[in-house]
Length: 166
Length: 276
Picture 1 (cartoon, one colour):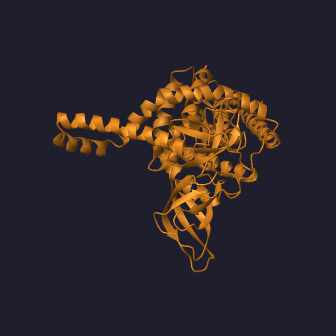
Picture 2: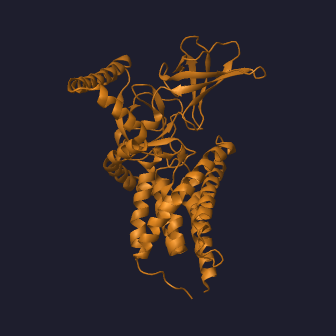
Picture 3: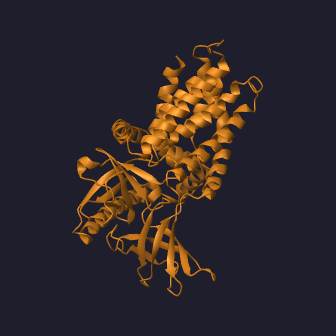
């Protein structure tokens, strides 16, 4: 049930990411709403649904990208897997978890992006660009994650309860 | 299966599949699937852009709210009804001038066959500066064709599918265009910097470049025709140690806010390559 709601949202966010949001910046930083939604969904609903969101959204991003096909999907999948740490009992429910995950996921997405691009022969992308692009994005995402997480949590609560796995 | 093991298995499966996909992509094996998906996504981007562009315009206005409020207060004090009518007339005149400029541009390059294309989307990666436009191989577009606006050079076609194409912008880190300074005829290479500006490199020491100089395509290398406007020098960087002078160049075309572009259809670049 959750996926029937999350998948269209992911599709819309990824379309927005390649059209209207691409030029939107927060204090000059690139904003990735799809990433924030995906990690928030993982924290609320679990890894399985989160990975599906990552694959659906990542494919749309990859189609619109000039980079190797799969770069966006891979970087999202890696970041979403990090968010699954929230399922570990040690951290579950901690108020700061969403901030840690948002910062870590943003960092991972950028590192994987640059790594894949450089391995694929886009050698002109300097490692320094990673720092100049990533840090402002991390800060922007730290500001936005409470809002995106709040909306996602509200949405998740209105869906069927999370399945208990044994 | 324990939940922990199941989670690890799901992650491994997804990551493994995507990595395999990336390897296959490097061989070109995924091109048909990519083209098919592009055929589905491009129309969605077109619709999405048209529906939500007014919304983002409003959001942009909200973002600049404080400044707009101040401007509004000033304007309310200054403007009377007659002045607002005058503003409307000026707007119409401005539009008229734009259209005339486009027509003149076409007459300056009469030998070029141009087709207009609408911008559907932009590369979602911060590290790649590309556009997606609504013209593809069905319209005769081929890899390598130059893309311009009436203001100047935008980039070149880097990938073509049936109904859409990707354009590598001048600002992309892979972009390099042979150029010359209109005033002094000094030559160099204009490269993308991943930022909003360009970098003019490999200008021999002793050649003069000053702020405000206009850069044009030199045609050397055969990838672009001669005399297309690239941009204007904003800052000259001279180093006593280096053998070359470099400069920061502001692109003539507003690459951040492109909504439509023109493709030079009958210019044959030397590097007009088939797609990988």
